Structure formats: C-alpha cells, structure tokens
Image 1 (cartoon, helix red, strand yellow):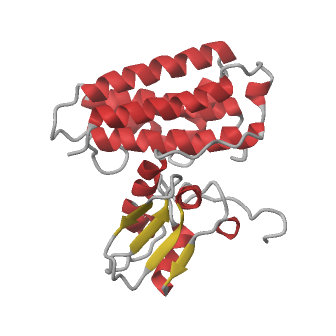
Image 2: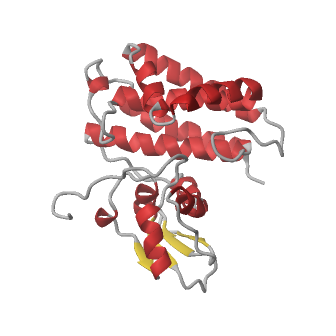
Length: 264
C-alpha cells in the first residue's frame, strides 16, 4: 500500500521548489508569459491553486464536488482556462497566500482519508495516494512552465519517479482520448534516474520497449517538450506510436510543444 504521508511530503517538497521560484517575483513578473499559450506565471499558479481547492472538496464533500463538476462541465471547451483566469486576477501576494493555504488544506484533507476509500474526480475515482501523486505530477509540470518562463533550470530529483509512474500507468488512457485502441501487450519501460539508478516498469522480455533519461520521459508525458528535443527511444511500432500521444494528465489530448529551433 502506498505511503500517503511520504507522498504528501514529496508533494510539499515539489511545491516548495515552485514556491521558491515565484515568492520573490514582482507584480509585473507574475504577468510574464509562459510556454503554455495564453498563460502567465499567475495563470499557472492560479490553475494549481484552483485544482488543489477542488481536490480538497473531493476529499471532504463528495456532494459539493459533484455540484462543482456539473457547473464547470457546462463549458467543456474552456472551463480549465477560465478557472485559472478567474483566480489569476488576484494581486500577486494574495494569489501566493491563497495557493499556499490551499496546499496545506489539501494535505490535511488527504491525510484524513481512510484507507481503501476512493475519491471522486473528473476521471476515474482515485485513492488519497493517487490524488497526491497526481497533484505532484501537475505541480512539477506547471513548475516547468514557470521555470522556462524565468529561464531557470531546475535540478531533477527522485520525485520524478512519481511523474514517470503516472505517465506509464496512463498509457491506455492516452490511446482512449485519442480515439485509438490500446495495444494488448504490456510495454517494457527502462529509465535512467537522476541518481543513475534504473527505473523499470513492465516485463523484461517485452517486445515493445521505451528507454531514456527519466527527466526526458517526464517532459514528454507531461507534454512540456517536443519528442524531437528529448532522448527517449522507442523500440517497436506500438511503442513508437505511444510516444506521439503519451500524456500523464487527465482531459483531452494536449497540443504539446513545437520542436526547438533546428529540430523541426
């Protein structure tokens, strides 16, 4: 069984890295554009804060969560962007304080979820451990957008394993949201961790395989870099196809990113 306390500690650490990037920014710097089209740094933090808030609702009041989902799904095309934009108008100091408070409330709520209980969500219900892992993945991914906007290179950590795990587990989901039938064969995944350790998923004798640096794989499945800019290798036709559609996040297929100059 996953250790929720350990996952929440990793989520707190990942959030702390992003907090450190934005805590000293000026009001003008909060309005700097990020690689996500139409999203400023304020939008990125607002999106995380809003999602933390609704995740807390899922963990504490299922009926209220269902009502909130019904409301936002009335606008299936733009509700995510709208939710972020509505919160991003806050003054920078207020937005930062709101995000910090929401992180604390979410951690407390997930800590109190009884073992074996599944929480409602926009996709399939999730355990508290899965919710914490998903929030870490999204915090890391949006943190990458903020780091890119600021021209900062973050040090990869062992927490990338959580991001990679979601990317691997979401393989079939990526096929479904693209209107494709997932392969029946399990893939073999082998990634080089930041420490040099080897992280693996799937059978050792799989005929469809993916390998490369864990950081690059995480950038690919969160769609923060184009595959042409990453050292992720596919062995097999199905594995090759997966890398063109992989996504670790819920929702419709993402637009991804364009290749860096010289890689088009």
